[in-house]
Amino acid sequence: MSAEPILADVPWLTSGGTARVLELLNADGEEARVVGGAVRNALLGLVPGDIDIATTARPDEVVRRAKAAGIKSVPTGIDHGTVTLVIDSQPYEVTTLREDTETFGRKAKVAFGRDWVKDAERRDFTMNGLSVDATGVVYDYVGGVADARARRVRFIGDPDQRIAEDFLRILRFFRIHAAFGAGMPDRDGYLACIRGRAGLASLSAERLRMEMLKLLVAHGASAAVLAMAEGGLLQALTGGVAYTGPLAAMIAIERELGLPASSTRRLAALTVAVTEDAKRVATRLRLSNAETKALDSMGHRWWRLTTKDEADARRLLYRLGADSYHDRVLLGWARAGGDVGSSRWRALAELPQRWTAPKFPLRAADFIARGVAEGPALGHVLTLAEDAWLAADFPLEEAALASIADQAAARISRDERT
Image (cartoon, rainbow, N blue to C red; front, side, top):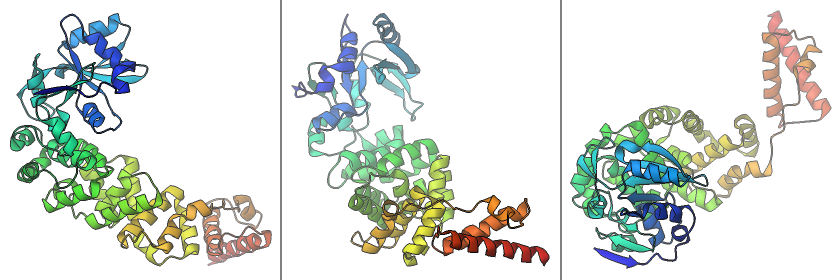
């Protein structure tokens, strides 16, 4: 075990809510430390993300001390020893040190304890098994400091055993590697993931979705997903063919255009070639209604974009709206090869920045004045007129609009007569 005062100057540790929680729990024979990802991120010079705290104090004692100090406490996972303290609207998960007595995913049975070594050894990866006290001393019982500095994601102990405890650790292995690792995945961990891949079928769709969407927006997502595909791990997640080439292209396009990483766009690039794929993936990962709708829209005849000129693109932008249009263009671009130097695809993608679709200027009153009765015929004539207006490239001149309205009304009259 090593203990080094290497994080003494980290602001979030020595002031604010974190310092207040540590001070609250470091008294009367109890001890508290920040654990897990925040420590790893601090070693790597990254923002801490969620700040989790472990303590020797039992949950009821944590609640008692919080109440005495006027701090709100929420029993978010009290059966497993977790109480969330809220300071200035910032949540801090506080968990009593524990040992697994039976391990089967999130339903593992735990016993509370006071042993920091055993608490570290029950975690997943060495870089997540670190803890730091209020003075900045980092405690490393599992070799996590060296692994973090080398950006090496390595299971604590026997990889097969750790995976068998919770098969979601397979996805977490690739997600943590994509976010914080470098080079090829750790060989022992990678092979253990392949051996345990059948266990992915036992996981809930909600847990798979959460990890998969996080993985897709990580910096090293493309290489990590490719490694998963080569290990035969994607079939269990997508339920169908996975397209690693379009995913890599989508990531390159986002970066070329200066766009934030989009988990939905990247999932579409990886899994959706036609709208049926969108429905399958949405069911497999239990996507939200908004995510499902976005995948379905992106997958709808995206290949037609390969031959569209700007006039066609304006009509599509009008029909879809800026966000859906943009996502479909990017999927088409990625599936067409993803050449980031393509001026044509860039022009299509940037169309919403250059042009805003006008509102359809004709109204029901324009057709009632031309003798069209209210009812189904009125809705039909409005649709005909809007289609003609789009085909004429959005004219706004009164003469052009009157001509469109006259022709649509005349067509309705002919249809009614026949």
